[in-house]
Length: 409
Image 1 (cartoon, rainbow, N blue to C red):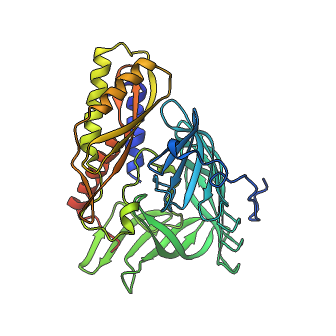
Image 2 (image 1 turned 90 degrees about the vertical axis):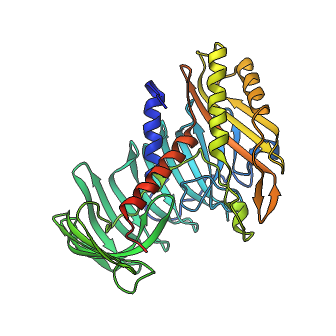
Image 3 (image 1 turned 60 degrees about the vertical axis):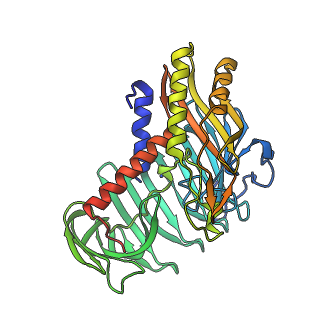
């Protein structure tokens, strides 16, 4: 798909997502008013049990355990309230709370879809987990990390010339790294935003950088899964171990002292299709035939723009479709960033005439289904973020399969 201008730049940002998504001193700081138990919108405004529009540009949505994807409320760990701009990007302050107890989970700052500004993350008990700042979606400056008991865990300095571990402590306060020198041994979140896993890492630190031999352990092997060699923080070589053998590598490395940055790869466009099936011992796939639906909507919006003069419309379109057990579309809902009654009417007509979908089955039983879709329009160009992310994830999966790049088993 050819896109120019802002939507072309936005496309690059979306592809990046898929490649991944008061006093601050470690004391309890949890005084922000919860949202979930006080201002949840009416059911009629809640879409797929995953998100709602609180007002024109303020949205409320549930997130998975890594705050990287939308989630059905019954499976969600967090809920977020945030502002969105005309391109459906988070813009301005955002707050996360834990679903379990309404405790504050994070205070964040966004600018045009990127984390930008001070951010503080909390444990469920109210103690601070991480405290620092982002600039254009990258951690910058001093970040301080804490254990759940309030004990400082580590201090990391993110600079243009590198990432430096300044200090590291055990959970009982014993210092393992001071002034950038010592031995790191602890748990680090590793992998991708869609499939992260916690691994044990250990190795020497010199002047804040990795030095010498580093090892990574996982739950599948009794010995190290990876052994890597560093010199002055520069990766030299590595060897991965698995049940099928060993492999040497010299480019990308896996051992590190910093967690995978999940928050910067948020996908707020793609609904969760798995939650309902997860607890029902599903047989067969419950997932949507989204490729077909999205392609039909994409072409339909383009046809509307060709027939009608909506070239001045710029912003997001939100569509919600409910399908019956036989795959026939029923109730629909459309929201536009900019009020345009004629355009809205044309979109409703498009949705009402979508082709009948193949029924969705859960444990061999046909079920009703609801589908949400975000469409971005500017200068008669159309982008459906979910479709772009879907294609990119398929591409990345094939690339990883073809290269045999699997280092954690």
